[in-house]
Image 1 (cartoon, rainbow, N blue to C red):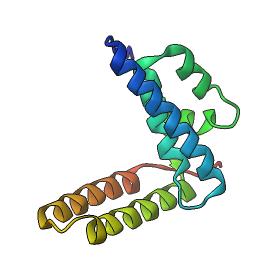
Image 2: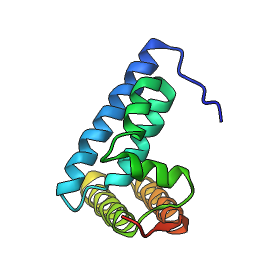
Image 3: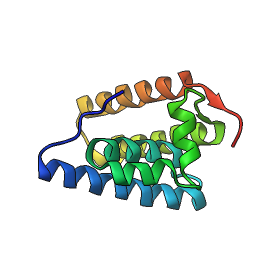
Length: 131
């Protein structure tokens, strides 16, 4: 599949920055159980695929992170612990945001809808048992 690259320099810089930030937080997720490693690596892979072939190739061929991304792209899914961590941490953040971050009811509804959609998506993804 041929991916379209961002042509605008500002967009490319933002995508690369988002990708590196996602990788940095994913590294922390290796050591901190509430940070979801795999979803952040997938986000980084997406950002890099739209902005830089060199960085994207580095990430997907990385001996530590590459297997997470390759397993997802090959349709084998993500590890169970990554699914659980992603869902739990997402709902913790959404609940905190909904309770203390806003008084607007419609924002709380949007947070609930987004959380439900992401949860359904993650639960429907195949579970990779190899990691």
